[in-house]
Amino acid sequence: QVQLAESGGGLVQPGGSLRLSCAASGTRFLFYNMGWYRQVPGKERELVAVIIPGSPAKYADSVRGRFTISEDNVPNKVTLQMHSLKQEDSAVYYCNGRWDTGEYWGQGTEVTVSS
Image (cartoon, one colour):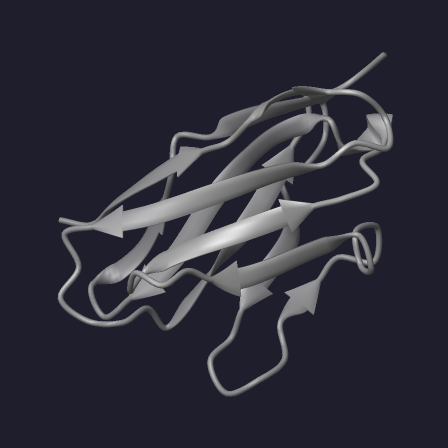
């Protein structure tokens, strides 16, 4: 079975930077799509960024220009580089990916942007 492991969450000050990573295990092939979502209490989980093979990366309007999603050197591993962080970026960030066997979610890593 496929499992996703997120890391890199933590506490940062407004305007700071943070890098999240997601590594998949138990996969036999390269992902169809892989990216990040985030969720805060009382709100719907929203797409942050996603890698779509053969197409430009897709970003939420709220993070475009500040966040960058990229593939790591290891297959089925994705990095989300976040810059100019704002308080409204605070959320639990979830890794998401789709393979031939189905769609999978990580358990989440918390990002808190506060002074």
